[in-house]
Structures are given as structure tokens and as C-alpha cells.
Length: 307
Length: 117
Image 1 (tube, rainbow over the protein chains, first blue to last red):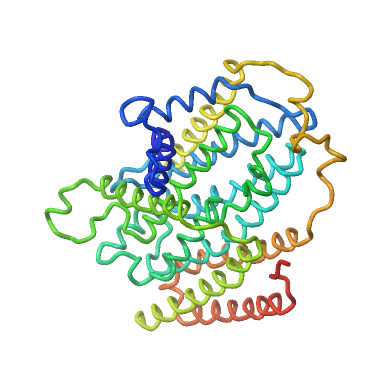
Image 2 (image 1 turned 90 degrees about the horizontal axis):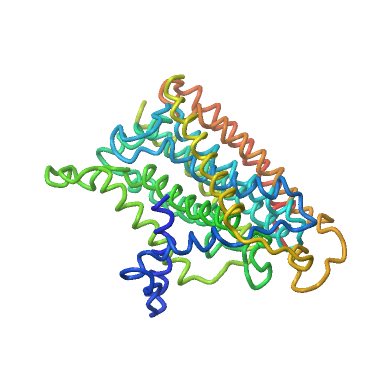
């Protein structure tokens, strides 16, 4: 929770720095209390239910979006055995939860009964399911090498070398797909403010908007930690030296997640937005065939080495 | 099943938290309703008709393609985990499956199902 709030602070600071501005610096020392102030501000604003909307679904969708963004965390191992539920199908669970995220957006767009929201939700759903396919295929390649669906075991399988080394092209594709999956720039077509105002959440105000917002940032952190677990060796230090393993695992984990999140923000501050047809063709015509071919290559190499 | 109990607790916690934040804002937030505020946002215009009208069929097509590929991914999950136990037969049959799928994919591509314009 606090992490999500401070990610918004971090984002404004980083983008401020990249654009040679100061970012928030008034509330508290270095503006550190800014997220708290934003939260209170959002909480005390008026919640608007548009008269044409389906009130129940309208209220349900931000709740669902935020709850789903939190739910994925139940299986993420932050350190060895430092995990809420060490289930043996952990990666399936995360995959399922992140797929369900589409529902919140579809429900929001449909129940708002507004053009912008409807178009934004359609775009967002099409984009998310397109990139989910390549994310799924990339996960398969990782699973082939790790032989387990349990997230702890996937990390332990990377003791000798991180999967970013053998699967480097897949790491890049996975990262770009997570950008698209979380609707972040340069793939933030659903909320392209120059044409759709704000996309699926245009009718939302107050905490209902806040929950969407927090959900998006929660998903960013969740996806970054998934990249960390799948490719960057989770809580493992980069080299198996004594003095490096002296630093506790969750520090390594957090450092890697923060680096990935920084790249998220960096990308947002520097790259222009994609066109929608380019976005879809990137997903279906480039990432999907590439990750499919990579599965065949990985399995062939493993089969050759195994026999 | 015992390891799933924390997840259940977590689901309850997440729901309570999000419902709580939502209802707190309704309780605390100010209320001043008037008709213009409650109308659908359309840059100051009254909306002409229902917004749930026609939309591009492409979105539907993407959804159908997604179902095909997602099902395939579900097939691949157990195969990937059991890869070392099923040997040559398992390897070859999945390669055959992927080849068939690729033929279908190439067909879609040539038919223009993946083009947006």
C-alpha cells in the first residue's frame, strides 16, 4: 500500500528530474508527504454516479480492479520462504489474477455509458488480451527451464545463472509486454488524453478514481516483481559471493523491482505514444511469433541436452 | 489445500480494504448534486444517443483469437512442467501441435485478421 503511494511520488520526482523540474517539494520534507495529502484530497472529494450509468457495476468495477491488483501479492516471494501462500501453482495464480484485471476495465467502460469510457475500455481490453498471449508464451519458456510452477522454486532454479542470460530476448519482450499489459506509456492508448480524455475512467471521481489509479500502480509493481522473479533471480544476489549474500534477500528483491520501475517511468518520460494499429501489429505479428519460436528453440535445446 | 487458506484470508482482506476505501469516501466526501454534474461527460454536449451502440468488429476478432491462443497456453503449461518425464514422444507431439497452430496463425495473418486500418 505505502509502496504504491510512494511510487506515485517517485514517478513525479523522476519525471520532474528528467524534464528538469523539481517535482513535488512543498508538503513535508522534499514533498515526502505529498502522496498522503493526495490520498486525503481524493477521499474528501465528491463521488459522482452519472445518471445514465449502471450504478451497481459502476461502483463495483473500481473495487474489483483494486482488489485484483492486491490479490496477486499473496504468492509473490519477497525472500526465501518469505511469502504469504507458497502454493505449487503460484505462476498460474498470478497469470489468472492478472487476466481478471480486464473485467474491471470492461465493467467500468460499459457501466459508465459514456462514449469515451466505452471506447477506452474496448481498446484497453483488446490491448491487454493481445499482450497477455505473449506474456503467457514467455512464461512457458521460463517454465521449461525451471521445471516448476512454484515461484520459490523458479527463483531457486536460477541459483547458478539468472534466466535473463539464456532468455535475454524474452526478457526484453516480457518487459515491453508488461508495459502494454499495465496500460503504461508508450502503450497508454486507452487513456490517450488527446482523443479519449481519460479512457475507461473518465466518469470516475474521488476514491473510485483513486482505486483505479492505485490499481494501475499496484499492477506495475506486481508485474515488475514478476519480471524480477522470472528473469532476474528474485531475491538472489548477482554473484554467489559470501559478502553479497550477507545483504538480506528482500533488499535485493526490492532493489531489482525499483530498477525495473525506474525504467517504467523513464520510458514514460521519454517515448511518444504508439499508434493503435502499430500496437496491435507489434503484439500479434512480432511478439507472438517470436515467443512461439523461442518456445520451440528452448524445448529443442533442452531436449538435446537432456537426451 | 492448507496452503490456500492465506490466499482466502488475503482475498477477504483485499475486498474489505477496497470496499472500505470506497465507502469511506462516500461518507466523508462532500455532496452537492445538480443535473449537469450528473450527466454523461461529452465535452459539454448532451449525448445524442446511447453510447452502447455499434463498435468495430475487429475487437471481437481479437477476442476470438485470444481465446484460441490462451487455450493453447493452458495446454502448454503442464507440458512445460512435465517436459523431462515425457521424453521424445511428448516433445514431438507438442511440436506437431505447435506446427498445426502456426499453420492456422499464418492463415489468419494472410487473411488479414491481424491488420488494423
